Length: 343
Image 1 (tube, rainbow, N blue to C red):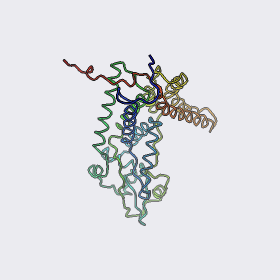
Image 2 (cartoon, rainbow, N blue to C red):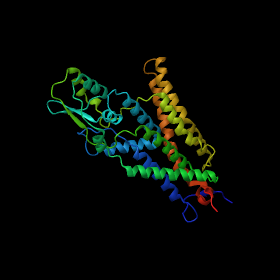
Image 3 (cartoon, helix red, strand yellow):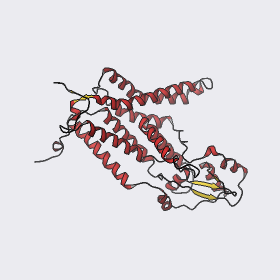
Image 4 (tube, helix red, strand yellow):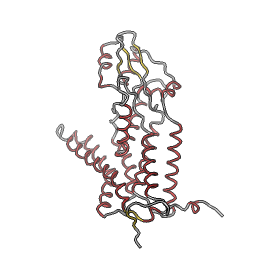
């Protein structure tokens, strides 16, 4: 008897290809989309800026989910170090570009967080009176979406546990989905207090001309917060730990059945590279620049980074290509009556 199912599987005899794809794709999408917390966009940005930025982070979250976790962790510790005597949510609003400075001519400028804090302390810029309630009113975090995400994740994980208990095989697509869930949990834990989808910043109007030191930074557009991804200064330890956690979910599929031996070998190489390549990248980036001549380490870092992105793309493609030939047990439904005590 052939134990491998080739091609599309219809629903009537158990779970089919459509339900498998729908469950995983919906879980991946809703987990990735719901955790996106972008900075406050500058008022001069067009109406397409925010949707395009969200789509960019959605793509990052799908191909390299660990990057999203590192951004959230960096954001968290950057916000903790702002030094302002505010609540954590108010500090979040500050660090995400929630304030713009309006000069005497009526021109709006962003300002770097640490400089803005210094200006508050020096009395150069008046401290805005923004309460948590006002920030919550600006934030558009949807409780219904959170509840939907929670229910979908619980249901998905319950099915995986039940399949493992009944020795039913799972697919690499389900492993990838589990990795996305773990990454989403880490990311959301660190972005829990960050306001979400704030479209308009609070404008601080200057009543006097600030010293030249502040003007130099206020009028430097390169320091603009609104939507610029400038939180990539993550430490090697944090990034490697996240990559190890994410890569472990793929290593679980080490002995899975694949349509070909070549695909199995490539999966093993790719899943093992997830935690090891980032380690090499950061070791080269942080250590070799102290040993090698200036600029010599850049080609190595870029080459390894490119290889890592290719590996991540391969894993993303293979989770779908591998469905063309899977063990027959993949399409066997869970017997829920055996999972609970009953008479």
